[in-house]
Length: 143
Length: 145
Ligand code: HEM
Image (cartoon, each protein chain N blue to C red):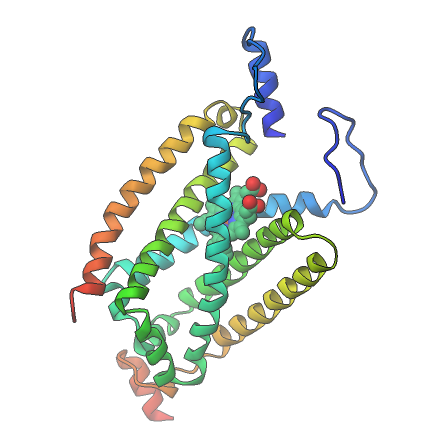
């Protein structure tokens, strides 16, 4: 429904030359499509992590030593990099999710969806620059 | 399989509850709440203090001694798992066909229900005295038992 609003919005704005090849819409080609691809991949990755994470956290109810042993693996270099990737995925999914919500509920969002994609990317870079050094220090800094 | 109707064709309203609409709305409203719940979760567990190297039984027991975090984690569990599962339902409907699709949907629903029950039980019946704690009040309370 958002793409329909985008098309009728463009139609009132003036004449648009007929495209030679199938042209991009809100969801085909360019930022609209790639944000959707990223949203799917990150959403799926986060979901599978969540399944595992509920199971490992449940050990907290059964046995303190077992919980400490499993959470200890979260502090290893490989898992540490995995956590970095997880935060990166969640950051992208969350920021783009807010963009999707703005597109679906506001006219303004439909009009500025492309700009919002790049704003989301910029905020994501800032987020990662804030998180990555500190996290890598916790993982690789030795304790 | 369902086909996509022509653009601007008349919407066909069926009778009964429009579940797809409520699912669609749920993805958006839970998404807004999840931004707060997830980034709060990551901030406290992975960023503040010593980040991941500080997490152990005592750390979690300290958090769960406060009802605030029990409510927070329970909301996070339900909102995130149902949001994720409903999203995976969309992907399953998009990419799987026939019997495989039904099997995957049943597995998805089963895993979701089991994990919701498990997670909720853990959060509501947590016992800080099965391990060492660093919070004074907890150490005293457990010693008194
Ligand atoms: C951090 C806050 C989050 C926000 C703002 C958010 C936002 C959204 C929105 C608006 C959608 C609907 C997209 C559409 O219908 O086109 C969506 C889809 C989805 N989300 Fe989230 N989400 C968040 C967290 C999560 C989490 C924690 C998970 C995993 C457990 C997850 C997994 C998914 C999946 C698998 C989809 C389906 C993707 C698709 O249909 O292409 N999301 N999200």
